[in-house]
Image 1: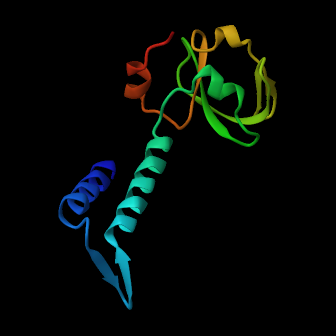
Image 2: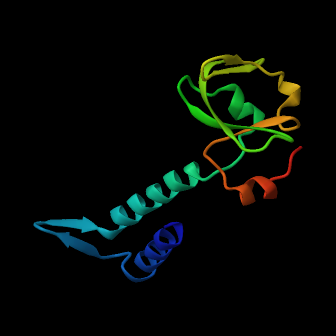
Length: 126
């Protein structure tokens, strides 16, 4: 999907940057279409699995779903943010969990979306 978006953007930028497309009775500037495609591309990239930084983990909003990974444990667990503050983040899925920030990235980490096993193995711990 991402490759298709990149290809569409490249084709439009190279070939139609000064034109317009006709949509029923409306003319749509190609620059507007390119902007929409780029915005879509950024939204998709934001959803790609990656480990959150400690700073990002500290400011997670209530009801955000993250994927919790603990070093040495098999698999991931989804966690829903219950409360966040600058010292620790507490999650709940029937219970509360709190961790010291000095362990983040060393003993546990949060992913913004579910990674594949290959992505988990390829992403080093601190």
